[in-house]
Image (tube, one colour):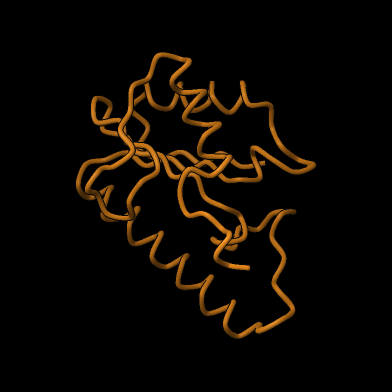
Amino acid sequence: MMSGIRGKNTKPELLIRKALHARGFRYRLHCDLPGKPDICLPKHRAVVFVHGCFWHGHDCHLFKWPSTRPEFWRTKIERNRIVGAAAEEALSKAGWRVGVVWECALKGRERRPLDEVAEALELWIRSDLRTLAIES
């Protein structure tokens, strides 16, 4: 089952990339930066992570602790959170601005319109704000 789950080019990532491109942003996908950001905008010194709510244990309607092998999943998800926080801190110290778009902002019963998410991202990219989190 796990072999069918992709780590890159997910639907939420593709939605965000397409929306940013339509708004005139040119970005890189493969930057040699901590945490391997999903989208890198060197011109703006900004990176964007598109986080899956399950894999990062987001406190939203899409996340539910698995009932099978609970200890394994708690360890794995907690490690994902720690690694993500460390990557964000390293990027920030290196002078990069960090934005996170959570999966729940793009899908599920509490999703936001894609235009609204894209506009929030665009405003953040063009601003001097250090961080951004978009969630449902």
